[in-house]
Image (cartoon, rainbow, N blue to C red):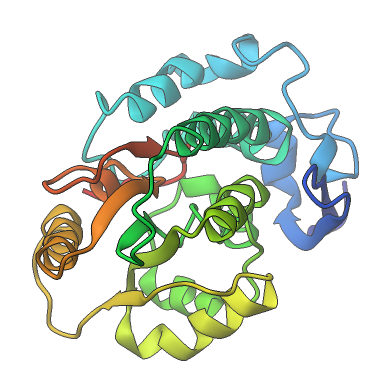
Length: 275
């Protein structure tokens, strides 16, 4: 291809609302060729032509499907970037149907658990949600930055956050709306910082997310790990008399560290690791 960049459209059907979210993404031509020489012009059609575990999953010496499994099982830890040769595999996974199917399994299990809850109805029962890659998707950003194969750049990522354009993850929204319906208050606990509060609130509302109990953001100067931060905030909630009936995130650091909550759920995220 002669063009330096190619405009691609991500069009993903939303099962819950029969609508669609569309993202305009530009990706470097060479990167697309590396992902698949026969790539279709629509990025939502980008998926492994040989199956999720075929040649695309092992090209370059790293079995990418096995690597992703290790990440999700929390056996592969403390990594900084996705293996370079796995950019195509992760791109196919995130932009094809596989990520949505895996997310649906997680949310279906969460909803089945919700049906078993015996609620006191005293306003103290909460469900903790992470934001990035749990409630809102930063895929428009990561699709332009190698799907995690390049080192994280806080400056460019924070500039993206301040656009307030991140789309909601539709499967998570199903769970969120169900909890509101039965009287469990969603509460956001995020690694985003306090100076990003206004844009985060605006972004959530623009995606139809309302009615949360609280939005807890990291305060300036906090130097501890993500596990220490999130478990500490959950402990404060428990000490205040709240009952954490559920906890969902895309990172293990979202859901480990006492008190975890009565039940935890992890959404897939092979693009980055936060310890």
